[in-house]
Image (cartoon, rainbow, N blue to C red; front, side):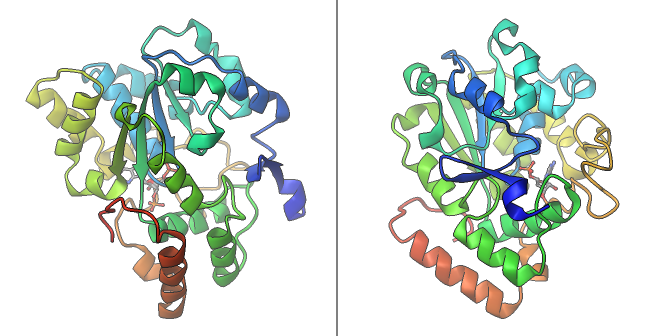
Length: 287
Ligand code: A3P
């Protein structure tokens, strides 16, 4: 298959045609949000699946049933994925937990009217690149990354699924009505998961005992979450994701880019970052 066949271009953003269809995108555009919905908004490979574990556990008060019985893509569905239409989200009780990889400015009209709670997870783009490189090599619905240097250019130019990391992060940081958005980074989750769980619970207005939060954090540690069949994509057919090539829960670490990028590639990345992020005031933990 050619690159053009792999991707649909939707409002300037590349989407893998096998999981995003015009019908699914129409469903997304017409989706009716509720003000008490909880949305996990991420650029791919930034900790989406992790948040799809943490948030349901917080909302269930630590009861593991939701994360043990429903796969992550059903318990916190991506609104734009074609399959989402079949989940009867209209019938789900509040508060619903939903996910999206879209930019802030590509959200449906109802989102801006209802202003649901959003948890926006950001990750050092060099680690996002590294994680993506391995993911593109194992997921059959994505274009094979080819040589790393080529993939790096595509990544920096936003010619990858969900477009440019830079545009994505900036769009959410520049959102209006920021009081309904919580910004958190993958690195903060790694640094102190217990504290992150407490902060997320507070944002979601969910009062939990300290022991419950501790249990949630313990369960969501990489080594433990990796064992959850409902979150590690082990039920996904190999033709779709070949985890013998690279596991979905691969390393779960900060700074793996140092093992991936050459010195010259890292310098090139930094120069592109400096240029594209020059107007951003937000203080990222990795800066
Ligand atoms: P790596 O490939 O660097 O290991 P997403 O869910 O947005 O696609 O992001 C996937 C990345 O998040 C992968 O990164 C994956 O290992 C990591 N991840 C998932 N669950 C995690 C956890 N509990 N702890 C740390 N990292 C986790």
